[in-house]
Length: 437
Image (tube, rainbow, N blue to C red; front, side):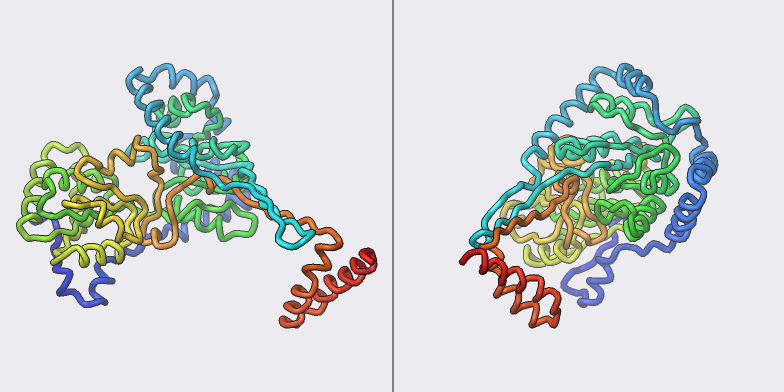
């Protein structure tokens, strides 16, 4: 059984390279379904949310908000070592993100004219924390901590019920450990609709963060395109990794890093860039050995069925392939990973050397693991403190400032044919000059 679909980079035409780097298109009805749900929630409010909660979640309590006492009980029930691990990861994530954030500043741009940038946090941030095939406690850390550092007034967590009793208890306990008390037992597109529109007892979020299935992603995208709807964080689809590994790399390490990605999701993207057929053979053998007994073996195999291994002749080709893919995660296991890293222009997060698995970044290294996928790393970075902030410009001009800037503004307004703009400045200039005599 061949696990890695092999291609020789030099033998592929530009069109073939683009085709191989393209993510699979979503042929599902996710957008149509999400649009229908959003429309019904907008028209019917809580009644529609409850209908979908009963149908899709199997859980529609009188109040979707999880009581604070349940959060505390979940935290108390955590294994002490689990709680210790959550807090240790939170500390590293907090220390890394503490260095981020927009800065306010003020300067004189014209004599008598002052321009200021004011930085403010979002009022309401909605955090979606999935718990379908796995309770993503790490996602809660990665979203909530930057929001807290930014000073967001209200952090509302949305996490789907996993059984009749409600959401995953580990996620509830972790929320309590982080000092968060607003958690709602809702999932899917109906949960996103409730959070984006502010119905069924949920606040109206200014921006919604977090990964989810195709329906969640579609609902977020549709809300972001709706006037007055909640903004979205970043384009996110199935998770992905691309590994550049030369013959000096440990094939078992490489295989495990590929599997760590593949076990996420049947649609996870798994790519390898290697410098010899022999090394790809070694990675294949390690994959087969490690798959045995893997609890999520079927999921990993499904993801590996669409995998790609590119054989390159040199580092220049390896860099070209990696930049063309613009992956969410890029692992470099070569003799000199630092040198190769300097040539990478497009990647959500980069992991250098044999002792830096993606798993470290997923959980506790510090940088955010909520990253752009599907090639969006060409334009986006990962979730940051700045994404929970917004900036407002403030201008203050004295009469002498108006007189100083007026000739430039009047000239440009005339150039564009906007005479009211010109007059708004010209009249002030004339009066300012009279005052200054």
